[in-house]
Image (tube, rainbow, N blue to C red):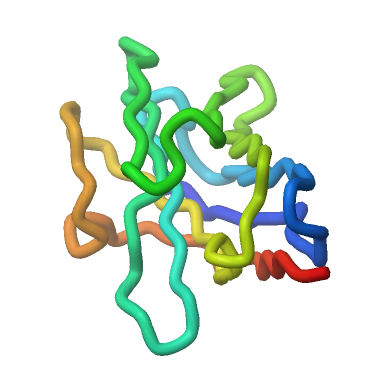
Length: 124
């Protein structure tokens, strides 16, 4: 199975942008649907976005719809999360996750392949 490493987090002002990357190694990246979740302090892990393997269809959580974009580059074994118009409520640890099943999976309990997370802080 793949191993995942996120990067790209940091401190950004409200209204700013960041791009997170998730590099996969160890297996066939294109066979996995890739997702991003986030977890703020004291809160449950929340679904952010997913890109379904094969079809490339994308789905987003309500709180990020229209501001975030998930994409993937199978040649680079990398998934991305482009984040725009960031708000303080977007502050969290962002995790990428992989699943080999075909379909839409928005519950973090469905996933057993995770990266270590990258911190995003939105503050002035």
